Image (cartoon, rainbow, N blue to C red; front, side):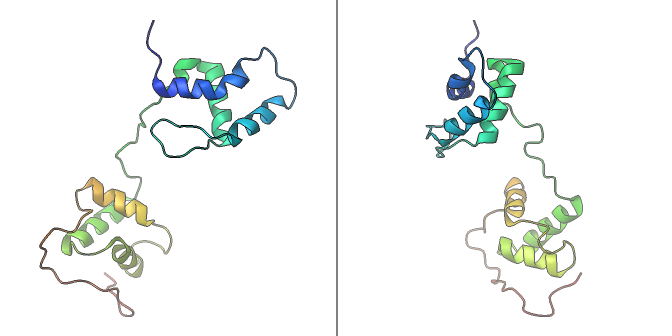
Length: 158
């Protein structure tokens, strides 16, 4: 017998009150899911203690279709790949390499002011993930480059 994945076992335990029943009356599934979502849990690998109703419902239907094996954690197919436009990625990386002391906020403002990205189209966390992926998320120690301050008017438009 194959060992059960730790996360699958946790999810199965959460679903216990749902899957231990032979029959659920009309509306009972949603009622039980709502009750399960209100309980605190010791979630493996997380500091969070709550699980959303939609998540529990998704786990329930995955369990019905695929059994316990369906509840096991799966690696994302797009892990480590940015969905950001290549043009944006190139501009962000160039801005950071040009001045390693530029902050994420400064890079974002530079991209928006230069018309490379529309205002609000790019998040700071997306920029951080891209820089981290390329090993550019930290300022080099002992960097003698000058500090860059955000421009108030007349920013670069190239």
